[in-house]
Amino acid sequence: MHLNKKAVLYVPDGSEAGAALARTTHLAVSAHQDDIEFMAYAPIAACFGKRDLWFTGVVVTDGAGSPRSGIYADCSDEDMKAIRIEEQKKAAYVGGYSAQLLLSHPSSAVKEKEDGAHVAAELAEIFCAARPRYVYMHNLADKHETHVATALKTLAALRSLPKKERPEKLFGCEVWRDLDWVCDEEKVFLDTGAYPHLARALSGVFDSQISGGKRYELAAEGRRLANATFSADHACDTYEGLNYAMDLTPLLQDDGIDPADFVAEHIRRFEEDVRRTLHKFY
Image (cartoon, rainbow, N blue to C red; front, top):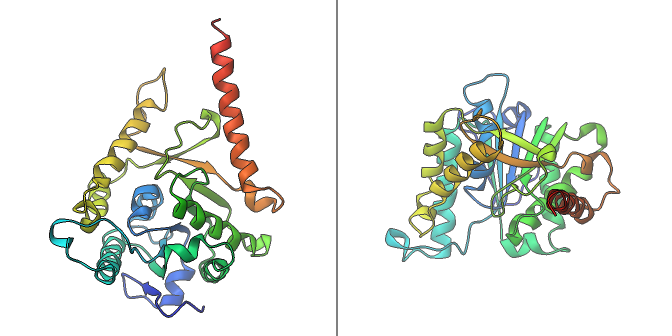
């Protein structure tokens, strides 16, 4: 596996890197440090403490340009890159990840259609080494441009693999736009109720972002609690916490499906559902 010279590969339990990747069953690809813990806590919890299930995280960008205040107010971009790498490694250790990769690409490179091709190629190498059964990434309707660009690079990487080497399932997870609007029968429920102390510990590791003026850890927990309650309108709560995801597996089964058309169809069905309900009563 050939990673760029700035990339970091961290294995919390000290196993050989190749073996750590090869044992991966669940893998999440995110744009930034901390995105994984907010959008993919369910697979982290599912693998925690297991010996037959292993979670690996991949962060694509270098974390530059983040807001900073307090003890981080005078930190340079280079300082923040180093701090965010250490925070992500701490999360990987606390969460018992099989491996954590930090590819350290500038956000601008990820968003470039042409220059970003090497990002997809690098991700493809990681998928070949890890062979995960389940992959989690940003949802294609996210409003953060770097998240969307990262998701598209991830999809391109997966589509570059022979179909027999692709994961069983691909999920697009909520971060900068939730997926409450997706029709209920199409929502994927990611149960985040296990080990609430672990969820808080993982979120709290990213002090540079929280102290920078964004209470991400409270927002992420609040969303999970709200989803758990509002997921069903005529039943008692059956979940302690939920993240929603969109099942993107059809995009791996048919390379001819345009990602934009795929999302637009979800939006069209949401519109039809709203119209159908309204027309019942007037």
